Image (cartoon, rainbow, N blue to C red):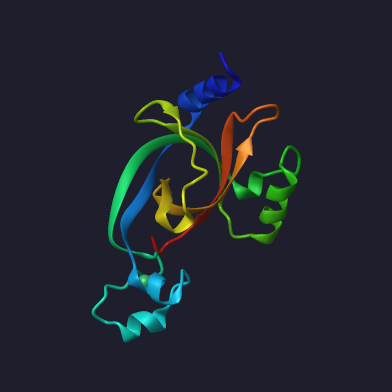
Length: 157
Ligand SMILES: [Zn+2]
């Protein structure tokens, strides 16, 4: 059994249930007009176009996936075993709320690589709150057994 399989076994048995939501939709015309940065002014000047509200997408469709992972409150994170680049970000971003370690796709019972999940198109629902995935780091010493992600609570979601 690979290290990743052993790790996922722990996640499956002891992880907390959560939902990861991926948003798909039509790319907002403001991006072609003024770039990826959200432009309130562009939307004010183009009232016929639906406001993407900073997401870059209109006609948004959420797709939910049940997951399992370990959720560690940020206050409990010690300095040992945390990669330097993660420590740097933790130090800079005091507002992150959880470290999410996993992740198991509970619907398919397979490892879920969330590296490519884009911040404003994905969020995690855990313990009745919604969180943006701030950043994701590989987890493991000799090989990647899972991932650790910084979650930031966002009441606008
Ligand atoms: Zn827009």
